[in-house]
Amino acid sequence: MTAVPAPDTGPDAGAIWHYGDPLGEQRAAQTDAVLIDRSHRAVLTLTGDDRQTWLHTISTQHVSELPEGASTQNLSLDGQGRVEDHWIQTELGGTTYLDTEPWRGEPLLDYLRKMVFWSHVTAEAADLAVLSLLGPGLTDQRLLDALGLDALPEIAAAPLAHGGFVRRMPGSPDGYIELDLLVPRSDAANLRQRVTQAGVRPAGVWTYEAHRVAALRPRLGVDTDERTIPHEVAWIGAPGAGAVHLDKGCYRGQETVARVHNLGRPPRMLVLLHLDGSADRPSTGDAVLAGGRAVGRLGTVVEHVDLGPVALALVKRGLPAETELATGTEGDIPAVIDPESMPATDGMGAGRLAVERLRSGPTRQAGPTHA
Image (cartoon, rainbow, N blue to C red; front, side):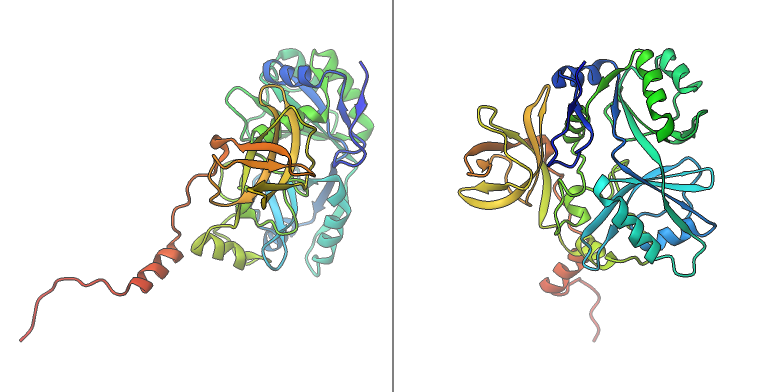
């Protein structure tokens, strides 16, 4: 089994891309179980009595009372409501764990430390590795024994006997289980060996990315750009996918979040594109064209075992699914929107309804007349 490294120019540089059979690894994730080493991700910890209430005030999620074992997505926005950071957050044993993209670990840590002021919070980089398990076969007793568990956790986190914890991720298709293991790097190799000896097949991050793209889950810095607001990539509202809580106090960028939610629709939407498989693959950041005019940008591009070459893309909201599209550096690779990936038609927000009523004038109602 030969490990093929991920491209040096991509977001997973330093990780294993595949072990010689990327499509076979994807199929194993669908039918059995695979182990994917994502230890290039950055992990931070927050400790101190004020960590939850303090983080609540500077992020988009409602985390002031996040219960023991709970996990959620969270964001940091700039003053215009554009996404700067995205992380997975877990509360366990008096510590808040944040794991994020490899390239955002140091900037996020620096930002958090600058925002502490007088709060009783300590932010540190953690020497933890992230390993992911995918597939319907994760309930096998041999795997549970290798992890030292009596049963898999529900949608929650639980400590592991050798250190670290296991976290069950929400939002996967029925019968499909996704677990993250956050373990000390010193024990990661031993844990990988125990898990593979229990019959779980090693797979590269290609398999993880294909699963993520098919599930329409965006990735910071790949499927987002410097203009992305949470509404555009479904980081608001969806159970298991939401990273923004609409009923909480003030945080940076909240005005934009509230305005777009109440008065209008976001300018772009995240969709799945099917790409022409006979041409060279386009790249992240390539323009998406309609009639020669740019209508969006390409995000993650990946070969899926069932769907073929696909990509996530941010395109102009309202673009019909049947629009003939093209992408690539020369704009010569045909693409089509998967209609099932189109976001639901937006209902008119309460603020917009009020504006429309004002514009149309008062409604005349019949009533008694007086002499």
